[in-house]
Length: 149
Image 1 (cartoon, one colour):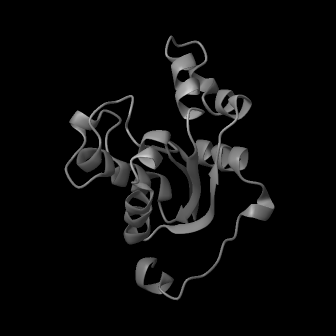
Image 2 (image 1 turned 120 degrees about the horizontal axis):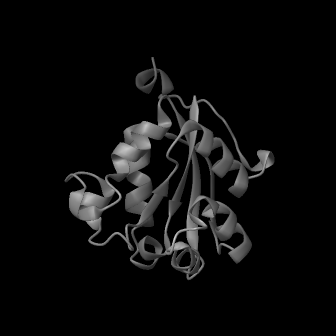
């Protein structure tokens, strides 16, 4: 089972879209193994976006993610990374397909509502950055045999 980190970003929280976004991942069949409502610290934001440190938009990314509370979610499932990213849609909302989170609910790249890990390795790193092992609960759902082969 793969794990991915989802961040419901400040714009989505402020717009009251947390439940709708969470519903889409659950409807897809991904299992929640950790979730919390947090105010991201500058230190954690800089660690999370470290890959972009040399890019001109780094400071604005950090300032944005710390501007308001977020919901961080650890999801687990077969091909969780690809499934979550397909559910989220293209980074640029105007290129995102209808039916995706960004395609249905976002207009601009700087307010694209949600982050999802982009690889299995980054999923592991990102989940560990936001959750301790004690905060993750890998559990069997009664519906799992109807979702996973």
